[in-house]
Image (cartoon, rainbow, N blue to C red; front, side):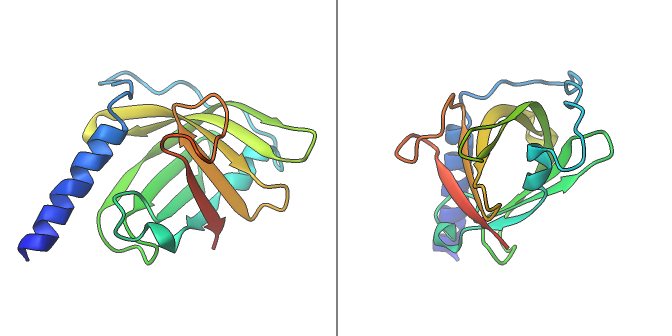
Length: 155
């Protein structure tokens, strides 16, 4: 039991440190979502993404994006790929979306966890086949060897 409690505290500390560069938004309203046409690159992010290698690693192993009518997304991140452990719920609002010449879809969003009073910018990239999501908070380009890089697969 002590080991589990120590791990839980460690996981929260890692989460806080990971997002220490985040911008606190307090009670400020979220920026309006970028209007999206059906089939646009950002809509490809809706769904469930997992990486069971992250189970118990202090980062989310399952992330779910659910499209909202306003063009943004409800966001839920789970400690483990099976949905167990801590759940972090919030919103993702895309500021910019684009597609490169190779067919990768990119999105720059602000993720807000109101319960924790935190928000941060995240760059994501979805593979041309729509099966792989790469995420990197605070980055201007996706770098698999860079800080806070994560990769997920569509479930």
